[in-house]
Image (cartoon, rainbow, N blue to C red; front, side, top):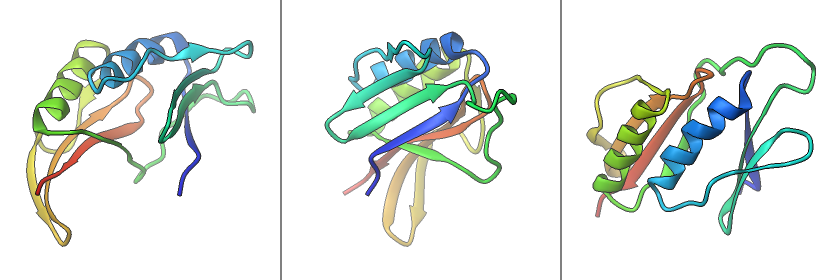
Length: 126
């Protein structure tokens, strides 16, 4: 359904350090900075990117917005969470763990990136 997701950052380099760590914990390659100063993580499943807002206003997070990254298992979600905390992220929501929902059991870990964007690692349990 999605081709790409882009989040705003006031400091793209600090955001790159953070996302290199959390996405690296999931086996993804470091991001690549393009000539416009944007950072791209290109995968077969889609593209995640970071950019200073094009209108020149400060970046801000979307209240009520969450971007989820697929984790292959709970251990990977925990590694993602730890990497984020060690690289400028901050905790939010409940600690990583199992949540029950209408779609079954999920293992979730939440963080805020250095710009305040809310992100999640999600593993759908069998």
